[in-house]
Length: 409
Image (cartoon, rainbow, N blue to C red; front, side, top):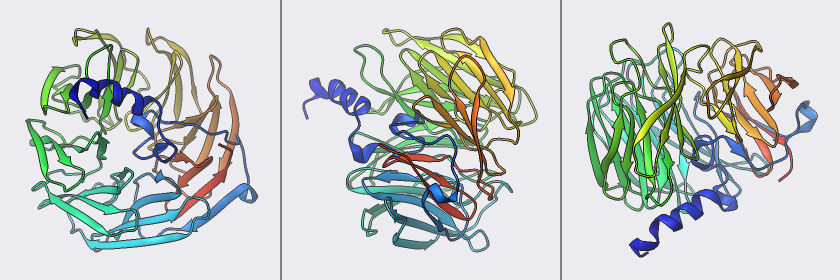
């Protein structure tokens, strides 16, 4: 591929994904959480396409490529990691790979399988970490191991949870740890390290990066971290284009929700579970210079990543609140407590927002300028996993099961 066509080509594949790419990473194309399907607003077990029991435990989200659905799981007692592949249309287990991943410190609400895989037309890429090893591995779509790379020790009192992404021919990892780390790009073909950017974070990050492009500028990878703020990296050169501190570096905070983009805006979140949380919007000009457009510090979503639809932003919080904001100004349109508490991020299809609470209750909201809950479904099992939308189905992972809800493409 010639360099002069590179930015245009990337813009095309990012904005017009092929069928197989519809949900190939955490929260789908570029992490925006929006699926191309017509989904029901309420359902019963009779409306399920299928439901299968899943081994072990894990909070990673399902991803899909073509008719294959991938998740990771683990045995918390032994540290064994499990990669699973199911058929999207029937829920049939196609293959299962197990490996001894080892044990390390872990938050009671975390798991050894919280990082969501990412897939391309050849492979599925997974990651996990212990105090001794940060592992990134590739399997082909039939489950054959392709490569495995060790990025060195991993330090976090709560365990690892950030997900890798694919860009061009790279697998990109935000390896921000407690008191150190790096941003890393690996060759997707063989796992060799393409570039590394040293970092000096003070808390491990769980925010999955995304791609941002404004005007005629080349695409940039956006990372969020408490100490570093928001960082834009040139993925081809492996260098920082710009970085801006937007969080309170004097208090103990952590980035968990992932950054998302819309037009010239980048939205990102940071905070602490018992302290102030910040939802910050940056506006980036064609000169590549970011400026703060607005911020919210009331009922901010700490763990769930928001949804942007048109000129509105929709958030859910750990305390069970749902909020609608004006995208350009950050002003509140409405806010309602809908019950439960949210760890999983919402996803959207058509005019509807699907919010799954920790207790396994799905709240379906119509995305508009008035609060309107149009559906409420009890799954009967708790969950912390963000669902996927693929093959005209809503795919939900609970603590014990993988469930496909029929919709239409």
